[in-house]
Image (cartoon, rainbow, N blue to C red):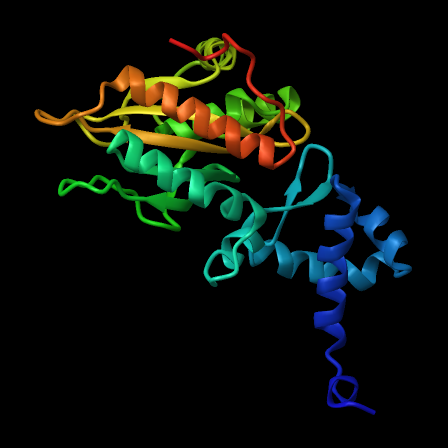
Length: 260
């Protein structure tokens, strides 16, 4: 018997089984459905579900009593050098974008009611504006978050509008209109909601299902000398986002969509 077989932690095994079951299902599951797939009783997994929720690894949609995985494991994975496919695909593209535009850029994914920065590249100049890797920011306070929601599955977008209060109490009707405009345009260009004097331009990274897996954003800082016009930076950003999307199996952008 090997050392790996000598030691058992049944509770840990149970928790990992639940996580793997939700990941393999590709959809949310009720407590009963999880128990059935694991060939366990509902009472056996109840406490583990509570613990996993408390640790932020899974979440419960209380309207349907269905559990789903959060992006917590994704966040943890990005604390080590081995990164997920998204970041691997994006890294060289983001590097080229930073050099061509002379602007920093960052990659964000949604995590519940926030976005998390999972990639960040500084521009090569002396003046740099960047967002810290791993930073969590309110979803409505970022162009990245708005772009991700605008290009999300309609059902998920509606759930977000209903469940995530807007900090400025913007009505749901207005939010839907703004998100529809972003989706139609294919990107967002907006004064930063966090830093004065910065113009954010943000485009979606689309997955194989055609919905946003992430958002690529340039926090555009106007330069008095040697700057690249924001219109040119937008075209560069759209090309970069399309390149990453295609690598992930997502669709290519139409010839006119999102072009100035």
